[in-house]
Image (cartoon, rainbow, N blue to C red; front, side, top):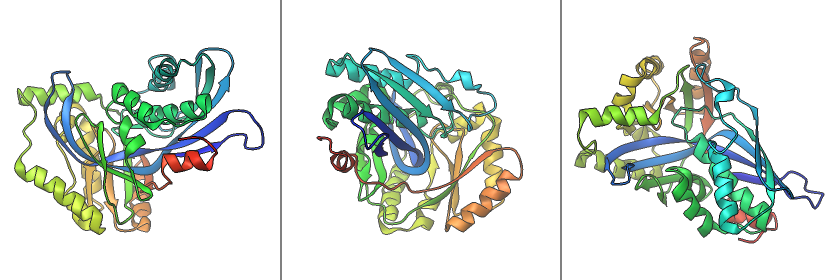
Length: 334
């Protein structure tokens, strides 16, 4: 994420955060846990398709969230379907942070939504992680990453990636558990991607229900697949995008195809353009392909857009200083 002050020349506490989405280069389901979640082995990469969150501290209590725009929603999700009350993960994150800090002041928050919803791109988790960071900075003047990481683990599966997945200027990580155990990994080369979002989203719970129908315990990770995960990490470290593309994998893909006919249709569209490789992200419905160059990605995106079937985005590896370095540069404590 990238943080800056909204009013750098005044004393008011108002912060803005640009926050990227993620794609899953590898996703294996290891088994169901006693808490109802699933243990995962996944490799996540942050790319520069971003939401923007702004927060202004106010003396009155309460969190007021305003949704500024929703240009990338799938057609079956009306703009008002994104809640702005306690059902929104941003609001829940800030209220948990308030309670943890004993803060009585409130905040006016504006979310500019560009990351598609119900897409497997982690937009909601990214926004909530950003809310924790700028909420802590604005209310206390301190980052307090251990507190934020602990809160993130309770709020959702992908939040910790957006807090802890940084290494050498980029956000690439091997994540385990339900996604909250984050190990940043080497990534020697920027990846260029095309993301296609079909007109229907996917419901994560439904995808896992289908997976459970096929296997009493959906964790059937083979040794071969887990070796592929290791090889993918090695290929990222070497900057071998061709090898990374050959190793793209998502255990949820077949279940997602049963739930949403657009999953197969989007895959067939990508097959036409012969990219390095393509894969479903998370539980879908967005699909991405890896390209050798940005110009190749832009060409594929242009051809996909001409079909008038998808919302299409060209993106590349998100790069930024670490959250801690950004906080220090803005004059906050860490």
